[in-house]
Image 1 (cartoon, protein in one colour):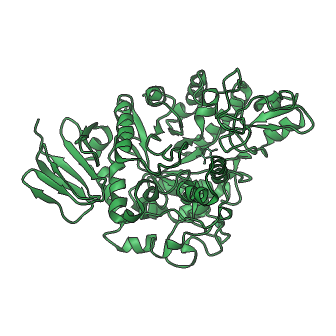
Image 2 (spheres, helix red, strand yellow):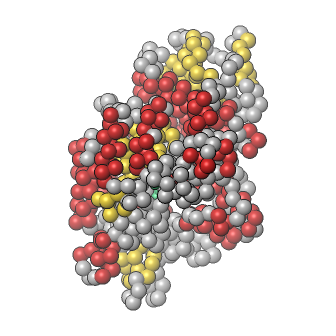
Image 3 (spheres, helix red, strand yellow):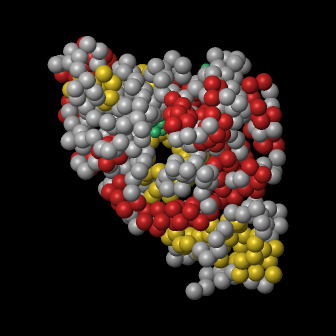
Amino acid sequence: MRKKWWHDGIVYQIYPKSFYDTNGDGYGDIQGIINRLDYIKDLGVNIIWISPVYQSPMVDHGYDISDYYEIDPMFGTMKDMDQLIEEADKRGIKILMDLVINHTSDQHEWFLRAMEDLEGPYADYYIIKEGNGGNPPNNWRSIFGGSAWEKIEGTNKYYLHLFTKEQPDLNWENEKLREELYKMVNYWLDKGIGGFRVDAITHIKKHPSFEGRPADREDGLVNAWDMYANVPGIEVFLNELKERTFLPHDAMTVGEAMSLDVNCLSNYIKEDGFFSTVFDFSYNEGIEDEASYEKQQYSVKEIKEAMFTYQLEAQKYGFVSEFIENHDQPRALNKFIPKENRNFYSGSMLGTMYFYLRGIPFLYQGQEIGMMNYEKKSIDEYVDVSTFEIYEKALLDGLSQVEALNLVNRRSREHARTPMQWDASEYSGFSGGKPWFPVNPDYTMINVASQLQEEQSLLSYYKKLTRLRNSTEYKNLFIYGEFKPAYTEMENIIGYERVDKDMRVLILNNYDSHGTRIELKDGIQKILLNNYDILTMDGNILELQPYQSVVCKLKRSR
Ligand code: GLC
Ligand code: CA
């Protein structure tokens, strides 16, 4: 395998709007990121992914881009961006931008021109079809709810939008459009960024039949995944994109390859695959059982099965990106841990559980201090389209308003978007003015400033996680070593080994509020990390405390 600069990456994701505001307008900005680069560096991180900062009407918080070549004034200027790249570079940190090329904003010049002249060249940059006897061309549902088609006023034509109606889908079949996109991607890479996180990329190819499917709800619509996710032929576009842009720049690319079957991983992440790596969504998505709404959390067994299946398959070809939080997910402590057990131990156990898997670990802002969901008293306190979709669907499925609100309080992606909790001062030190979105009131307890002081804080623990991963002695093993499941017979233990020709390291996580005993099969040579002060051993019996995690070097037997 050819070594790549990003193989030793530890990535920190920033949601700029909520990270740090330097001018008191209530919105985080690029200067805010620059201001906190030393903090990020100190975490042991060497790559930053920033959610979109391009010019945008912000209907989907920047995922609706109206100009790929401009920075939105909310975040600053192109000068700020250049400064960020330079300042990050000084610290050995690479920047990944968010690449949103499945759709643009409806305010993008291309779309405005398309609407002005439905026969003109720009109309073919988008997906525009004749209606079907006064109805949309088919019954596809948008991922954010409602029909995926919007009627073009004064005509019988509709344009496709898999996300909000302000996010029209681009027509990748049009070669000119593809050329425009490649030019733009190269513009950014030429600036010296490290690469991209590539948004919603499995949707760029639509099935040429544009067929409807039997309705899956009373609204008559359907989530027709086979028509617009990983549709055969997508490989032509993905290869072209890679060859024209990423490859010549030796860029790092992380595909948001939702609903990618584990058996299709190889094309995406092999050495000459479409991307450097893709996210492992296997144990992060689909937790709430949409049919019954009864199941609120995955069992440890389910997490382990999903995670290990992905790991075992991925290591045959390349690297996946492992994460437990991002800007589309509720907070990890809420998602994975029952209410009464959300504390330092369960938080650090979650970190240890995924940090030494084979792949690139991603951390999301605030995860390192254990930020939690901000549960609201009323649906009106939420602002995001996708939250409303979850809520409306739940009501249609027969949940009461209270139940639907509870659901949103568990599942909404907005929990990840509350302002970063820097300290215990007003507005959590995020901004001098009123933030765009309310701060979680728990900020007086959970914040960076207090955890920086404490040895026994989650923040300090995350630094230990990165320090071990980055250490000269173990780095190579954690990057390239084989992943091997361990102690799988123990239901609430997530255990695995990382092995290479020189070393074996065992990672044991007791994903349980009760202690447990493990009969070790191998002798321990050295404890590398432990989220408790104690470790109880009785001969070869290891006693683990509730949510205890240990990382240990094994004696090289066998
Ligand atoms: C991706 C983004 C999400 C956004 C959507 C549409 O899933 O992560 O935040 O709403 O794409 O661009
Ligand atoms: Ca600001």
